Image (tube, rainbow, N blue to C red):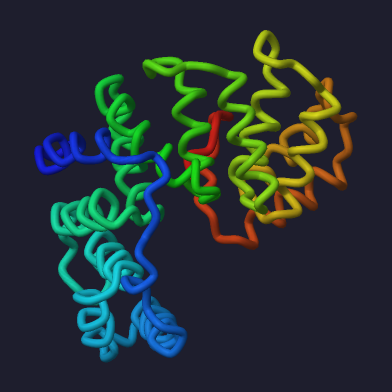
Length: 253
């Protein structure tokens, strides 16, 4: 992780775990609508409203987060991950913005080393303790990481449940994976329930998992060629990259 995250992390560790964003730092309803319209246009390929996001991003934390994501993804600006990290670090550590904190946690998750996973935990916790579902998903993954310093399957399941009940598909799929894995918290009925809920919520990982179970049959599902074809076709209709879902495992999404 970049050096800019290591020193400011001390600020976060010293801050209350339930920091809240000052309401005055959030866009008004009218500005929020302008921001949403501008971001939608930018992501659709129309770069003209970029100045709206830049202007609002200089004054409001939620707009600053959107600006950081544009730099992270290179949408209508030259991709600049260090700048995205700097903006997110300020938004998270100084303003307590859960989206920004979770972005930082996910950057560390992507590195995957024990040291980076250790640094990710305080960022994920800040949003998770405030009920921010994406942060709960990230925290669940951190507890489920066998090479991480906080490996705790019961804690992972707890946070995945919290995030899943908020409607996120990825933690639903992860609950399926944990409940379907022998020797972890094996519970076939729960595994089927969460796999089907993940599919209903639009998880492409769930689509391909159902297709595979039905293709060959498994302890969870009897072989059913028609259902296998249905889920394969549903997966293909999303345009998702099948090569990225060849090996079953936990979703970081």
